Length: 534
Image 1: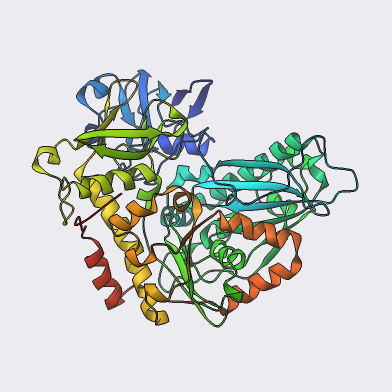
Image 2: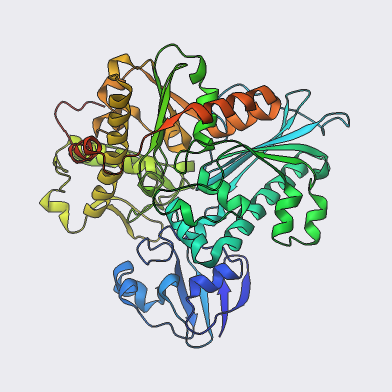
């Protein structure tokens, strides 16, 4: 069948095979559609509107859309199997203005005017996150930054978390996933070269920090052993390759000739399948190998990676927090885009909120989800078990109205999602401290890494039990430590050696089947609302 796909700017005709979902056909033909759930019909993010032709209403459609929306032609593309030619309009969230954390608020020397001098060696630091990609173009002699680029990781079309990506890779999408991330990197390199007014081929070195799954997908490794016990990675050591070698794997064509094909591309080492190079990079820039007192690094993303230690010993773990902290699996959840509700407060029964860019409210991002939960718990609207008050149980708590008049609500299911996420993180923290033989009072500094950690209200995070109260006064917001670590290794081969030592020496503990973790997890599912003060 021929399907016309309309966006705000384009109309593209694609081929959809009989028995193929519309989402699959769009992905196959490079139309990006965020699909947090990997096409299972649960995230409700891949909506299309039928403009001409027919797509039958499915059970999943009926759950996702109101009767009026269904009548207007709204369908989930992951559950739509066209049987005739039709025209659809893509109705997904606009992620072009996604807020992406590049650094950690540190002072950076930036070029003010003009291109890099001809004798300046140029290098690029890259952080590949599950959700976003951040890149910096640096002068290796001057240590001056000439350009930055940040963008969505378009592998989100295959699912919001690493498990979804692993499943996609092992189900025949390995080449598509590799092509997706390479295209994103190449687009970023080209954009930065244009910003800096240089020939992209002048780049002489690229250093990448990423979690283990992202590195495997970039390299085109077989991911089968990542997703099944004993979860064995193909390679977690430092990887030295080149952009040209990787692009050759996907037959990149003429455009590759303008890229730095011969530039060494170095992937930082990791610790395990679920504690990757992004955490090693964080340990490096936070100075764990030099610290006398125990410190903790917590990356509050979908993977919930964390480590504790000092110069004598480091142990790490990963806990499946899920995508709730990034707006995933939340009924009106969206990423950190313009219009996302990012902070919420309540006073005298009224709800007040702020949005990213002060734009009209479109949905709720991760920090907004945390704020709403804390406010509802503090006021007894959510009880200690996570149950919404009877007045809100069926329809949820209305936070705002969208520009189209649709209520943006926070539901009982949303409370459960944040419960699961915060319980996983809190239990991981408790297990790490117990295994290291310390309590909160013994921890010197708690580093919060990642975009969510950079933006959260730590008082509210402690109020709902995501972080222990004993961390008060010890928390340092560290920002994108993966990018910072890649940057450090870009400048100094000695820093790369230090990262290799950290990766080799840091231990990992598995939480699967750990009785103490299970106990802590169940305890952390509960909320406490006594004496909460914001």
